[in-house]
Image 1 (cartoon, rainbow, N blue to C red):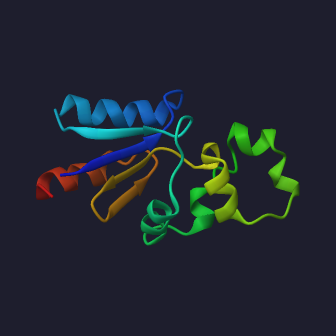
Image 2 (cartoon, rainbow, N blue to C red):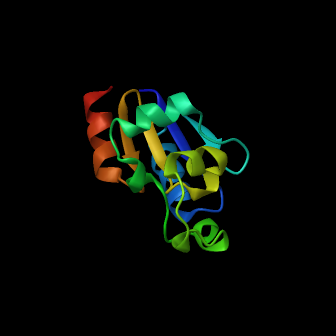
Image 3 (cartoon, rainbow, N blue to C red):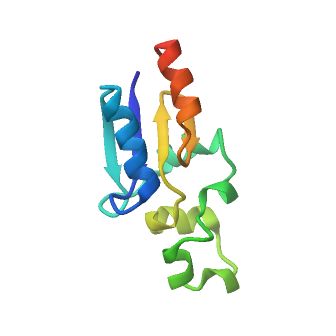
Length: 114
């Protein structure tokens, strides 16, 4: 397994995802989106599983702070320029990707030993 967690330390679901893998002693790489965003290549991999519209957190603080509800903008460009707009956590295991807290899917990954 090659687990990557993209999230924010102040996000409750991100902390729950980290706890899930820690409790099972499964190593993972954590990327804090407040420090470093997601590259175009990483975004392309994630978009194979989710539409770009699914990735933006329209209920989040950053979306409200920037008043994006009333603006027309390119979502992909917005996400690449401001990683705090992503729904979190984004958890990758090779080509598999989940969005949000998804322990039932992660359990399947562990069962497969992928």
